[in-house]
Length: 319
Image 1 (cartoon, rainbow, N blue to C red):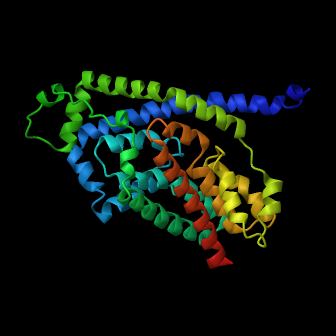
Image 2: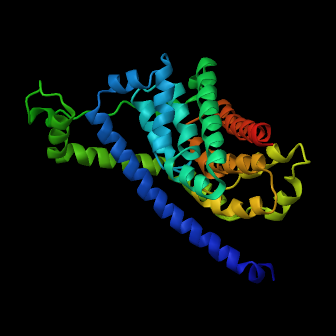
Image 3: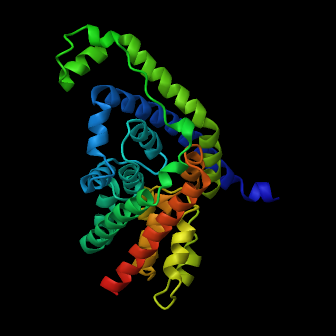
């Protein structure tokens, strides 16, 4: 029977679903709560100025913030929502969304150990350049208008915390003391994080359920067959294969090492990593709660572009 033959895979998918659902609940609520705390400590105008789409440094800061946060593609969503609520520029926010799962400390370290310094340097430079450039284009072409209106909310500010110390003491340390002394405000932030999680929960559950089905599925034999150096379509095919998978970059790296050993082109490997890490089906389903269809399609096209151009860059530089 089919069920008996595939029982180990079904059990593995069920374990994956339960584990990731629990992990996402903790991460989503925790990250949303911390973002709320940071928004209370940092004036919205300061965040808006630092991550302004009108200044080039806003894109660098957004990409830099993404490169320093070891998030998978799904974990970036609460931070992205928080940045948008803090009036951060749309372009720099997209730079963060693209960069965080693709160029983060854990993934970069694993790439360095597995595939060497030259591969890692090319990967980081090309991927960062493309994320910043595409984020700028999305902003210039006005894709911000395709963010769902109910996603952007003005966070409620509590006045009680401001009364515990002189109002002219506006240092971050003083604000932190006032905030953490105000249990009511902390409860408000926590309750808001839980409410946000409940709003996203159906999308999270559907996305992770799909991810559980594709979990661990890397068509190794097929990739070895089609990703040879003599196949001009190896890189785009690898990128498109990677996108439906829910495999974090840190897990993908050990999985692609056998592919490199079997002679799969480095460009195809880079495209597979970016496709899988940058836009998994669970992330796309969750983003549907935030983005309208044109922005969803632009996001997917951008990740595919980053994957393909990075892959061909390897062919040009190292081929």
